[in-house]
Image (cartoon, rainbow, N blue to C red):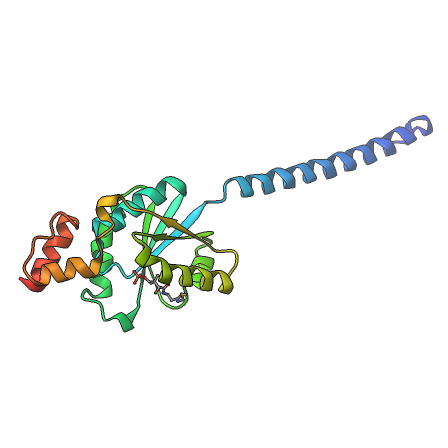
Length: 200
Ligand code: PNS
């Protein structure tokens, strides 16, 4: 049996405490670094919601602008059945996947219910809306303020598309297509084809 030498006993006890202390400091540091990395690596994500019935070049312009400001932009199609869309939800999603879905850091999704709930679920801090003209403002203003009331953590950001798209809307594109007009300058090629299949 080894006998502890009284002369060194206090030294070994001190070493034990020093060690325990250094482990504690090490763990604290690790926790701090972990928290810092979590904060630092948090994605800045935005939701771009809409009916997208169908997607137009104006929408794509807004997506291009938004994706430069955020790590990820989730283009989210609302179920919005009361609007009686021309394209089914599946068709709208397919057209979005074929166009916006091919852009880097853009993801296509669908949502039902409140937009703020969806934003929360996606851990998105912002909602993107395109603002074309003063006529858009009243509805957009009301929606942004209501969404803020529902969840103050979700910020609405308005982006202006190129001037040449200020008169462009899904509704007007559908009307032109229905009346046999050429919509190829306003929508991606796959959307123009889908419209001519509907009205052709
Ligand atoms: O392209 P649209 O039709 O202008 O998009 C409108 C949309 C889908 C963004 C809006 O109707 C919406 O957010 N619907 C989800 C339901 C909701 O959260 N309503 C309260 C908003 S004030």
